[in-house]
Length: 411
Image (cartoon, rainbow, N blue to C red; front, side):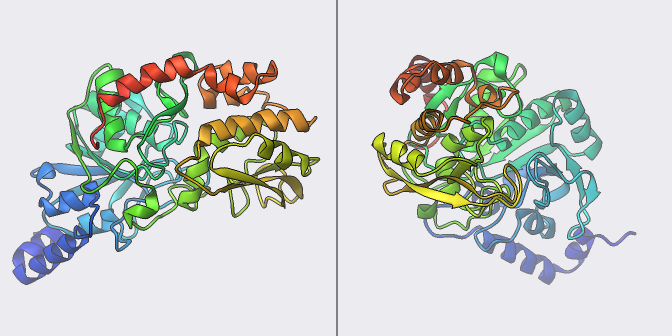
């Protein structure tokens, strides 16, 4: 008989008890408990008698910063068979727009399958080939529609339904709170991997809530879905209040401060200005060659709540303006309860266009994919003020908020 981890543990009860106790310890914490912690404390009962595959990345950790794949692999109560890696990869070695491909994980020996840019039947075939019965999802989100992990969730749910698999979502906090939905709502004709379905730019939901929304509103064939909720999380909490460790969910999301501004300033990806990639403050530093202190001054004259703008100069090490010194602004949020990242992002676009003659949109109109329609771009081009641009999406946002409310798990 081949000696496996499972047979070894069965033959040595003391070792099995030690492994189980270690895994249980990972489920203990003060106050907030993540979906994974509650899964462990429940003895993995939602995964009982299932061959399990998990969609995760470096953020799938315990509060002692062990990766949950390593924890589950060592625990005889769960039969973990495969890992599915999203953009940037399971272990996080790839930059934006990249993945790790198919390989066997050196730490566990588990097969790792690449899901990036795969959807529909092609992704369903991967789930079928892996031999799993249940697909688990555990990835830290950043709270913005164009952060691609929520669309990995969507694509995996759709593919699991096609392949006849169960789907379990382990919940984690929205790092920028779940207080409200803000920003323009996607129009379906602009659907891409940075936005599959009509949700708002800052959705104010957790991944488990989004999974329920996707299943209830958008998927043609709903997947058999189980959500493992958090306990102790309040919608008003920013990430630091959770006392959970932060692991960058992607290379350019180094801190929760980045996530705080991201749903607004990521819009600069749709322009010829740097969004701060290649600096230590991506999405907080914005700029281009030829910009000086007039932009920060004009932005401060907008008197936006909760934020100040500092004249800044920086030299990106990669991406736009690599190796060149550019001028622009740094965002300093001084009252995050009052701060509105989407309105701030719009105000910065409006003021950049006003003071910088070289301002242009990307030639592929990427800004329309990010905002979800032509409304923002055409309004700014027509000389609209920040308030006028924001007013343009209020009707669609109100309608989305009504739909969203049905799927909120935390009050």
